Length: 243
Image (cartoon, rainbow, N blue to C red):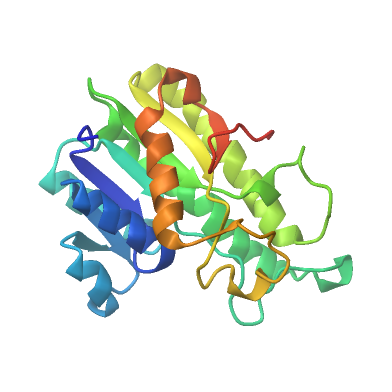
């Protein structure tokens, strides 16, 4: 598929974001790929992407990054928001109520919910054109309220549920403002990256995906997405997940 001419990948410096950038570049797309510290993004620069400084916890950084993209192109065909937070040092998924810490909850929400909302706030004018455009954020099945059977992981579950509400609400607004835009949340499955590494022991056989496969599956969904995908939450196999 060659419909993607200009793409923005937020959170592209490693793991799935890096592989999505590689595959988009392999298809001939111009890719603006973000990293918090571009000088340390050597693998990302090697893809041929245009590396952009962006920190999803800093709205001024988001605004500067999108302004730079707008100087280079007037439209985007694809925005993929990959940046997310599951664990970082003392911030770990909670096993029980006693583990909940307000400062960790606040950071999870800043990265997983507020970050995607602020990116959408600044980038949506670039999606208002006459061609198909996709704004997809990487969520997680554990953010589904209807699918929650195991409990725990309060901060990650709640921040991803909030992210899902952001996606749904942005979809409602852009249905009026950017009629060719398709807004959706995507669950990539469990991908063999640093984010999932401490939690892979109980993953069923065949359900731990290498980054190349995971990126290919997500781009296949993006390719086939049409108006019926707008405002939906979809898994790696293109099945719909309950909110």
